[in-house]
Length: 288
Ligand SMILES: [Zn+2]
Image (cartoon, rainbow, N blue to C red):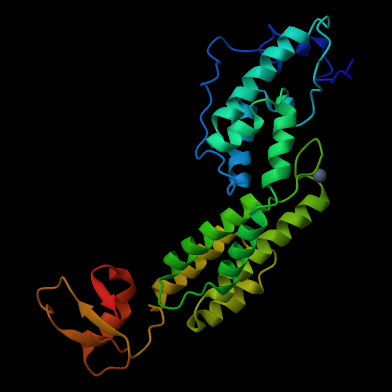
């Protein structure tokens, strides 16, 4: 008989009628009671696994795939029926949210736990290519002609995807993140994020960048973004634009059909104003 997993200090956690037990199945829980989007297609393992962990956790069934509850293979074991039911349910949830070709490859594997391990072994490594691409994109991203807000959100989207592909490891402390190791790991992670944001900003933020980097402790990334935004507004900082950029104001009646050279040093006040506002009217203008 397989070793029994200790699901809790109290034996009533093995009672399938106890609502706190992982063996408890709510009457509304069926093969279609979980929704994951998008399905696993082989190239999105980490984001899929994260969504699946949340869904299984919400149903108190994650223990069936992470090895916390060992398979019960003895049909005379009092828990066999309860375990078997949960295993089938979790198995069907996983099969429902993978692509048809992946589903074909796991449909005959009996234990949900084996399916989970199999998918991880097959697809978790594939994301290394995506991690490589993300790192390249993150470290080459610059503000240039973008507003601070646009630059920040472009970086944030890439950074959050990288965090999904390469999550910060969890510690096993009773209170998560309470130990010095985790505090340091998270602090370093935030530091890298903040430095990447600050170093991607244009030269005209040099003063405020240095002030922020001298702050101890370094504020959160949201606070740093807010400080930069404030500085941008107070000092009327306009994003960098190549002086030779031509702006074709397509929709403006006044400028219809004309091309303008947007130049911050132009004698023409309209061209100076156009230069300042160019990034905010994307779509209405065409930069050539
Ligand atoms: Zn810890």
